[in-house]
Image 1 (cartoon, each protein chain N blue to C red):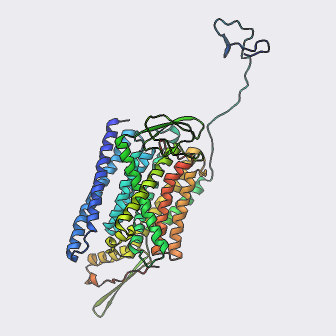
Image 2 (image 1 turned 90 degrees about the horizontal axis):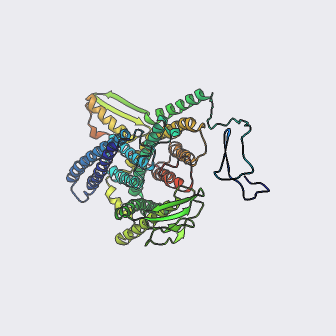
Image 3 (image 1 turned 180 degrees about the vertical axis):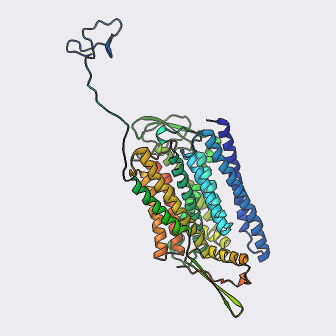
Length: 127
Length: 405
């Protein structure tokens, strides 16, 4: 406690409903809690988000769209019998190599009398 | 916390590391058959390719059991410190490679992917390995889901990067514009810098180098900073605390706000210098651009196959990254901080990455950017991811600064 008549200060400690003087000190002044005013303060946050269902539906649509367009591809296969010969054609808009492998596997599994070596060797063109 | 489990997990990680090294050797052998007869070359490729694949798959199993064991040992999923994230990213790259292998049976891709995995593991080992308990605010299953899906997405992007780099090396020749050749060499030099970084960290931690500085850090507090590489860059107004260590040549700028930024800047500088030096030495020895030396080894591969692998890896990665990096991240941010989006630097850079790959896909599908352009974008995309990993942690302090990042 610093006062005009004692610039060096005195030591006085304050607890709730209790004042403690420093041992051996001869204090002129003492501190005491007389009253308190409460202020409500919290670090917690309470929040509701009513748009959550809409957001979840939106996210589900985004994921569905991405998965459908990236994990499945447009693929078409035509098989035609002509005068005892089998003609096979296939088309895809992306992932040419893995589709070619798939066609080879299909030929194996269906047992069609086709020679895999006659499959088109031509590669998709760049740019 | 179960110490035994954690030390067991370190052992399985080490085994995985050596299995990957072995796999690299096997995969490299598959592309050395130049000048052999066609049939012998095919047999060599098949035989060593199979061993390489087996070593990779076995390495993956050990690596994965590291992850599970550490999870059991630690109690929380090991996704929170920089060490845990980097080793998870390495695991994701291997998984990405295995997925692409399952689709295309490419062993040569392993020659480029696995060194990336090994560097990531080496990089991970630089960070503090002691498991840190998570602060309660971050303990949530969403954290595990968010981080592991992001890592998986980035791992697949890394495979796309490897395939893109292979495409560039395979197709860029003297007929292409000069900037293609120059940028490709820059990319290879960057890879060498990454390797130099891992090598240096290993070397100096092996000899037990340490230098300490006292300085006032970015938060205005006194801090003791320990360097594990000789300090070229000192902390601002830092005071050398260790004897017989070199004095820093200059001080790091104060606008680097990341945690322990002066030390990280020092590490980056070392990597750039030594990586650049190794590159110059290599150039002096072989007297040709490095890409030209690797190019003949890839002659067997069709460029359009590489282009397809690169694209395939990226479109598999994109939905995964969207799920982990945007959707799970958003849900978790809402739970942990009460907002979906907060312009945290990591968030912004994740958005940039996402937009970049979205642009890649659009340019490819609607503008027909195949081949070279597409491969360049795939490489650049991964550079952005690495940038996010290194520089965002260095320059800016944000929510995503890891425990020991």
